[in-house]
Length: 405
Ligand SMILES: *Cc1c(COP(=O)(O)O)cnc(C)c1O
Image 1 (cartoon, helix red, strand yellow):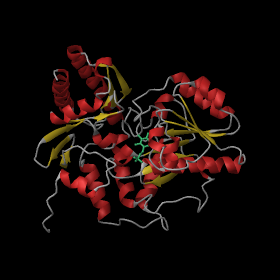
Image 2 (image 1 turned 90 degrees about the horizontal axis):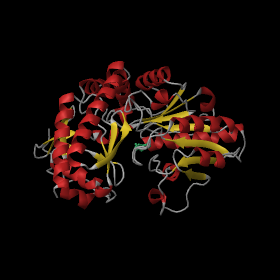
Image 3 (image 1 turned 45 degrees about the vertical axis):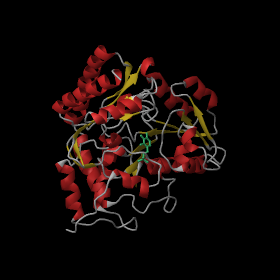
Image 4 (image 1 turned 90 degrees about the vertical axis):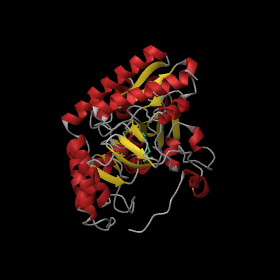
């Protein structure tokens, strides 16, 4: 093998577009829930590549699946179908309400497909007046122009010229506002069944059930964005199963690929019929390598051992966080569910989530934030209990360092 060029974090600022501001640490390898950087410093991973590495790093089954497929065929495009895509689609439809699958390469692309499908379905079945899309403030649906406009943070969608139209936002959990806004012009309601990026906001049961009823009443489609909540993250394969509210369209990405880029849009046979041949597409979508990995992820995640394990690990982490809070009094609440957990900083530490994230990294722990006041943990669904213990100990050191200035 040829000798590779030596690179450092400084090079980022010289060769990359400055839309990201990455940490100074450059991870070079990982195993399970541990990661090592260029200087061989070890980190415990509670970030999971932003809720993506649901089986940790380099899980043997995923390495096996990708290696096996890499030695067979990498890409054919959608001029032809392929075996891994067919197998993964079959497994996804068998395990969910859906009968049809569209594969994409990311979450945003899956949502883009969902929104285009909803608009086309409404046009086909009801007419051009039915174009309103309702979504929620603090919601996040990706960064393409359509999806970022449907997302509920104008800071992300402003400044790029004219936006796609007929998109309205209301407060999450405000059923009365939704009722007031909906009419026969409503094409779809798009929501996360627990808002991830927006601060780990859980829906009330009444709200989710009410959204479904209002959609039925107005012949509007309910789109669940399960890109962050899905694939075992909250303790069920998809959160709609636990909520007992069935959407019309569901999008999945992040954990679906366990670290390999893939996204999927799931829907019913009837609704899918509006995406006729030629209406939408993607060169890479349904790529054999991606689908082979997705299939291997699903075979492991969609088992009682892993899904029940998520609930047990949630208790372990919550208990640990409560113990830390009893000592240092920094959190006002612990939001989230399953292995998407968010200690909320109390008044005294407001707007300092980034500082806790930085201190955690300095103490050998990778964590995330969800806004300025919420620290976010999204570890592997199979993180060993001893790694949770060690990670929490590092987190306590980080909290102590911030508290003690
Ligand atoms: C991450 C995320 C997306 C965007 O996914 P990408 O793969 O970054 O395009 C969309 N919706 C939700 C809920 C997400 O968490």
